[in-house]
Image 1 (cartoon, rainbow, N blue to C red):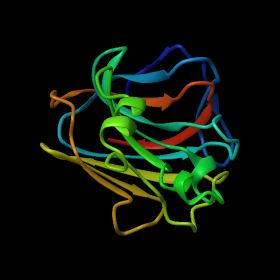
Image 2 (image 1 turned 90 degrees about the horizontal axis):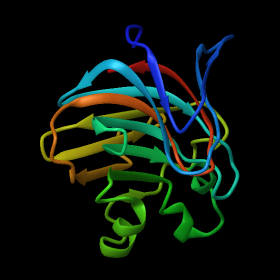
Image 3 (image 1 turned 135 degrees about the horizontal axis):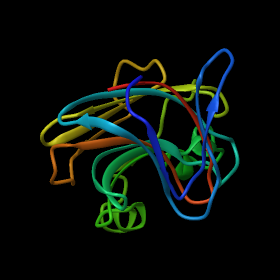
Image 4 (image 1 turned 90 degrees about the vertical axis):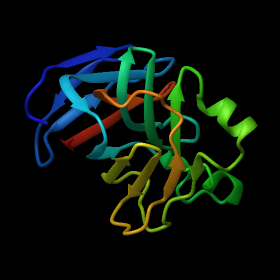
Length: 183
């Protein structure tokens, strides 16, 4: 997404240069989003590269969409530290769909265990750039991680809005790098 300026909410955003130009989103307490102003996604596909860290509980990187305000949106994110975790139960929590504020991960995990999170292919390296493709349909969200041809997550949508801005998302205590955003 070349057009649009960035607006950070509860984060800093600095430009990355070099072999993969993009945005580095800073670490902070609470969730944060760097909104791509004037971006719009109705139903369709978002693609981007994300890079997190392999540090337990300290790396949550993904994309927010259908922004209604800075605290109401849908999102998909990765937990790279769970990609290859020795604990099989933790590997189950590698990719997550949310619709905040009503359906954040603690409520989803408690009320709908294993429905809105899944493992990713073990070939995906936790500290590498990872391709994330999110297909938003009227009633479903599909998430493709890395080069996988099949969805790592295919869930019913909980959000009720069919449009809004797209943003780069980092979870509590987390930073991340983002590049090659296409809406």
